[in-house]
Image (cartoon, rainbow, N blue to C red; front, side, top):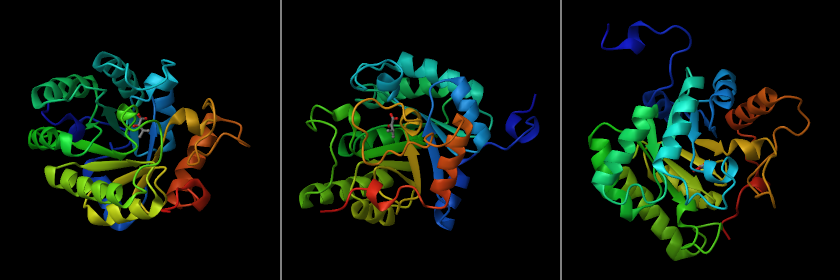
Length: 278
Ligand code: KIV
């Protein structure tokens, strides 16, 4: 058997690679990402042509019915990563390292091994200064790492709730510094969540990796949404950055295709779906 099965054995569409995502950034082509947690939805997203599928720890909220991501475990994540992986033939699969599963390098290595052996091609972790060591070590050992700054849901109690981050000048400076430090430590991608659009644009210009926004305006390199939000399944008040793509359409496939199209032509998010800087 070949040591490089992807190069010789595969039929069907070629898998999305990190190199392609970097090229998309440099050529100004928006990257599309959605969350999924099982094989059936992953297949729909994959067949619609999504670039990346994030197995987010948001599964704590939308699958498990919890009120935060904090109860999600590495075992929960591995189970859902394996489910998603079975539904995907093209998209790049990214997995969240859950709450307190990466507090030092040995723990992060063990958690990452579990998620990558379950089928993830990249892992995502939240935070800035506190995770630089972990990012440097994982990326030095061949693991693509996606950072996550702004509203980091695993810190919901420290942040006193789910709120926009980076409006105060000091916080703005800190987010810029942390994004640059993460890029220097070796992240391959960065997610910015609930950050004013101008700040997100400035961060995107300041780092050399693809920046994916959720509630971060249109001047980033791509967009991600939680699948359930895109399908109008959110409970409670709808956040400003969420658009229900199923409204007025008659299938999940049509909603996902409309999202991909809207991100690629930069009609999503609109200004009113983004946060102003002041
Ligand atoms: O867990 C998740 O779904 C996420 C996205 C909101 C980016 O981290």
